[in-house]
Image (cartoon, rainbow, N blue to C red; front, side, top):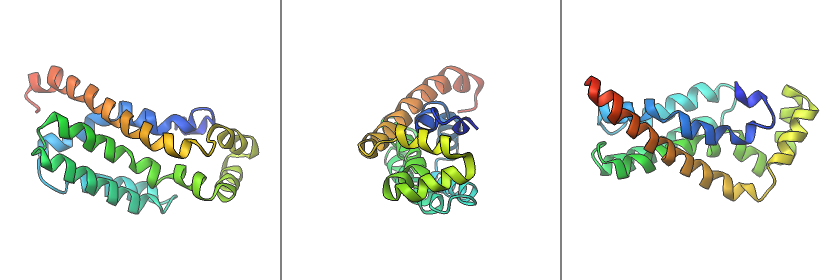
Length: 165
């Protein structure tokens, strides 16, 4: 919902990475089987892909790569769970509307304008210059890793004590 604010839209992927990793890591640490993160990425891609079809392959690919990374640490090693969460967070860039802005800017801006108005589209276009095509995925990966670090700390403090992990 916060993406309806044009000044916040470019930072949504960073915010998702920072604040939405607890369910991802709970799933990974509780299930501990290959395919859990792939399924999560696929489901997120399918739900988001109803309006944006590029989310489906983005969710599958990033989920599979996150699963491969987490599997190396048996879904328990914190040094593999953090990059796995960062990889899964990249789904929002490579499958979502961010990549469309960089690949086909005029079409993406027209789509934004038809859905949200010309002022929204122009603000988003101004906030996503071409150079951010490199900075955005790096930032989203790092935000996913930082969010995973926070989630792991919270899990060890609250969820392990409660016997959930």
